[in-house]
Image (cartoon, rainbow, N blue to C red; front, side, top):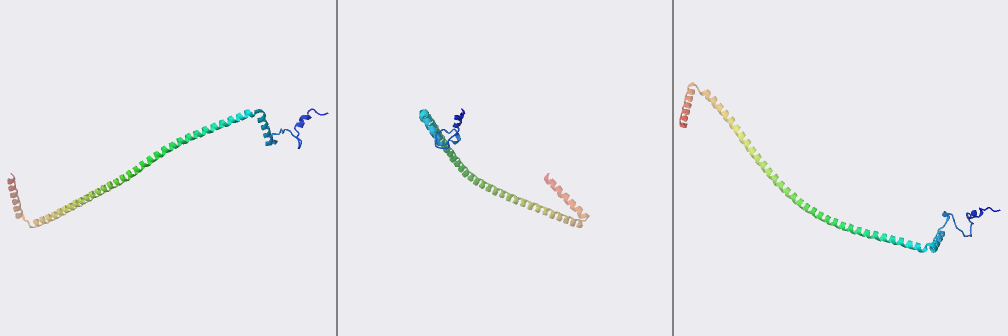
Length: 189
């Protein structure tokens, strides 16, 4: 007697060649079998709905792509507008920089001339101060020399007078001087 489970066991057994059957081993199925099964499913059961579903998916995808393209175009337009604004600002800043550069160079030249004039005036003043100082020092030295000469002459004269003067000459000189002072006093009164 055959066992009741024998027919079920035979489903797991595949003959080596020449027979037709379903392969239950997913890893052993080939693309031809899968394409046949899908073709049969699409043709007999869900062909109309599947094509509608596929058409809807494609339309949705197309709409998303078009929307993305429109958004990209809008972003591109905004970016181009910002680029133009940035270029305009750059041109304006470059013109201002050129103006500052030109003004800076002329200001530098003006400051240079002012500095040269100021330096020449300062040098002229220093030269005048130097000359005045030299003249003052010359006058001071001349006065010192005069004083020394006068002191030496006075000492020499006093020495000569003291050696030549006697008591009588001394008294006569004093009385003459007193007389001159008296006359000067009468004239001033």
